[in-house]
Length: 350
Ligand code: KG4
Ligand code: ZN
Image 1: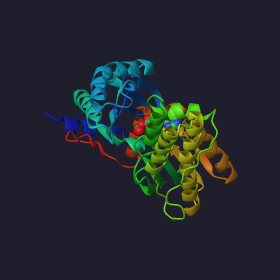
Image 2: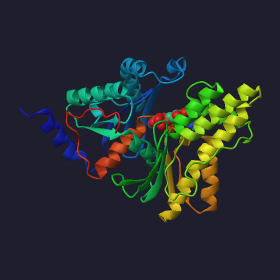
Image 3: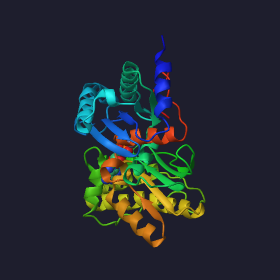
């Protein structure tokens, strides 16, 4: 009798060179339980259950609560994704899922669920790097996007500039040495008294504010492309603290605008520099912070002026979803990736 590995590999070898096989993708790395059905760079359906309202009460994601809610939600989210695509589990050729980075307990729900499902259906599965998933979101909206390009990943856990010559071959040109930009948005929002997640709240509030507070940009005059956001965060905290002590009023909308201008300005300046230094006039942006309206506006303005092609996913594909994981798996398989075996584990610090 053939083993699961033999059967699933045989199936994989039959469809891997086509582009019409059906992927069921699962994402559970943080506070979104998401399932999508994808085919090539196309979404057949996408379902996201966001736990934001559950974690709001705690001012941030509570890992144990996130894991429990993934367990509770995943069956329903899967059913919904299949129903929307008008497909059944029998139609699925491959399962893709986020293997890391993320919260260990949260990741494990998706990893175990995906592996068990693949085993029961006798089909192959593949674990995907969450960051690569964010990048892949751009292929959904721009299926003709070609390499090479300069990638900017701006999320709650990552801030990186990449030189991307193939899906496999992404080279890190610069990254944060401390906080991620989304993390800075969330922490500053808390100081201002805004609910979790802070990014969209600051985005909204900043629209009515003036950039009257100035912050010092780290690494000025240095030639690398790294970021640092902990100084900016501390700068905001100190400003609020000092004003309180002196009995001075701080206008939250002005603080939000000042912080946002600096946080986004840093991303814009380094990414444009990377594009020029590498002579690659194509920028591809991904991650939750790519949903920021000021970021979108600034990149559009400067890329137009500098004659740089700009790609940003629609807002709903910037934050965590499973469609990007399905498309990332497709891109990896196209470049020769093989299915994973049952020993694959979650990797929180991938
Ligand atoms: O990519 P994502 O959904 O999850 C991670 O992989 O981290 O990113 C979430 C991050 C959070 O820090 C959230 O505050 C931020 O993206 N974010 C925003 C906006 N929408 C989400 N930051 C600034 N402006 C936004 N509109
Ligand atoms: Zn993410």
